[in-house]
Image 1 (spheres, rainbow, N blue to C red):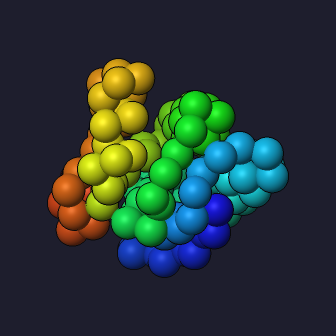
Image 2 (image 1 turned 120 degrees about the horizontal axis):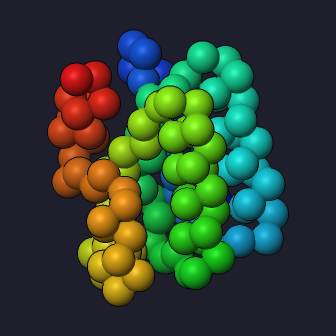
Image 3 (image 1 turned 45 degrees about the horizontal axis):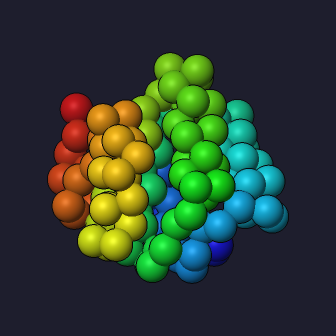
Length: 113
């Protein structure tokens, strides 16, 4: 998994790319979220347009990030999810936990509200 930061006012967009499979991805993502929260970014958008696949461990990584941001009284939105990954969200019922948007603009509007 690769992560690219793209700040948008008081919202940090994390552009994720590559498969999210666990292992070293866990420490990388957790460290990224921790640094953002400590740096004052509490509203985060995960742009998953570059993520072709996520497994159950990868889902756990996203859930951990979600809880870290929520504990800091922030929000996490997810956008641009490929159909294959979205189906995994539905199967695991994570679409009930995550705020998922079709586009980055929709997610930014919701995060800024």
